[in-house]
Image (cartoon, rainbow, N blue to C red):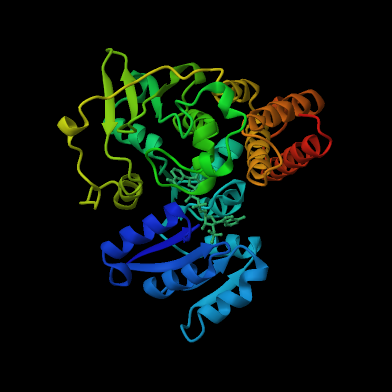
Length: 392
Ligand code: NDP
C-alpha cells in the first residue's frame, strides 16, 4: 500500500489532496503516515480519523491539548511544534505533500527529501528561499520533487518527452488578481477583504492577497527559474484574466505548447499524486465554445512592482530569495493587521532588499539552511522595524 503524508493538511491544498485521496479509495488504498496542520485541530482530527493516520501534528504547542482531546480513543499519535513536524517528515513514506504556507514549509520539506521521498511541492516558498539547497538534497538522496503549483505542473506536463535543450522560453500566466481592473488611485485604499477575493481561484487567504499584489507571480517566476534551471530572461509572465491557460512552453522551432483546464487545483495535485500515470480526476471539463475568448496582455509594471523585484532578486542571487520571501510574508502580516496599506507591501519589500543588500551582501552569502533561516529572521525583523519606525 502506498504510504502518504500531508503537511498543511487543513489548508486549501491539503484539503483538496484529502478529497482526492478519499475519492481514490481513502484508507483502503493509502496508508496515511502523517497529517499536519496549524490551528484548525478539529478538521485535522477529522481527516486523521478518516484516513486512519499514524500521527497528527499541529504546528502550535498551544493546540496540542485540543488535538489530543479531538483524537481521544482513536489510537492516532499526536505531537506538536516545529521539531515534531520535521520528525513526522522523517517517518517512512512514499509520497509527501508539502502544503504548509510560507517559509515554515521549508524544514519539513527538506527533511522529507533527506529521506529520499517523492515530494509534491505546493510550498513554492521553499524553492524561492532555498532552491539550490532543496534540489541538491533531492539529488543527494535520490528524492523526486514534483511541482504542484498549477503553472509549474503545466510546464512540467508540457516538457514530457521533450528535450529541455529545445526549450526557448516558458510563459507563466497570471489572472491579474482581485484588482486587475481597478483604477490605480483606488489601490492605496484597498482593504484586506477586497484583496482576499480571487476572481477565478479558490485558495488560502495569503496566496489570494499575494495574487492581487502579484507577489504570488513573483514567487512563481523565481520558483520556475530554480525548478526548471531556466535563465530569468527566458521566463515571461502574461496576464490572462480567464485562468484557463496555466502556462506555455516555447520551443526553438517557434511552437508553443499550452496547458489548459478549469481553475481547479485538484488537477495539478492529482497529476502529482498519480504521476507518472494519469487517472480520471473530478475536475470540470473545459467547454471552449462556451468560454469563447481567451485574452492575454502584458503585465503593467507600475501596477505590479513585485514582478520587477523578482527580477532583481534573481539577479542578486544567494540569500536574496530568502530575504524577499520573508519581507513579503512580513509585509502581508502588516497589511492583514491593518498597519500598512496595500501598496505599502511592495515598498516594505523593496526597502528590506535594498537595506539588506547594502549591509550584508545578500548575493555573496553562502547557501545553508542556517543561513536561510537567519536571513529570513533578519528580513522579517527589518520589515516590522520599518513599519514601527514609520520609515516606509
Ligand atoms: P492555507 O493557508 O489554506 O493552508 C496552509 C496550511 O499550513 C494549513 O494547514 C495551516 O494550518 C498550515 N500552517 C499555517 N501556518 C503554519 C506554520 N507556521 N507551521 C506549520 N503549518 C502551518 O494555504 P494554501 O493551501 O492556500 O497554500 C499552501 C501552499 O501551497 C502555499 O505555499 C501556497 O503558496 C501554495 N499554493 C497554493 C495554491 C492554492 O490554490 N491554494 C496554489 C498553488 C500553490 P491551519 O489552517 O490548521 O492553521
